[in-house]
Length: 40
Image 1 (cartoon, rainbow, N blue to C red):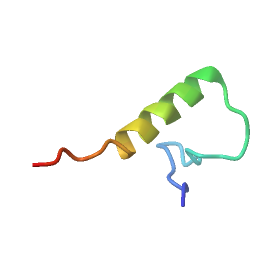
Image 2: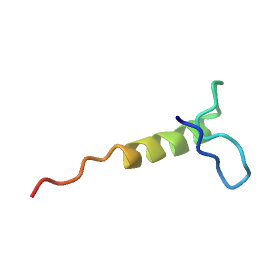
Image 3: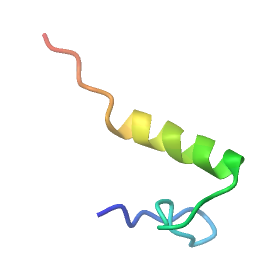
């Protein structure tokens, strides 16, 4: 779980503090991944 890698082969969810731009990119991925499907 949380072992996706980016184009450079780095983990997208490493257990370390990341620079602000990395955090922003990860938050965007998390929001996209957890966007609920519209109910019909």
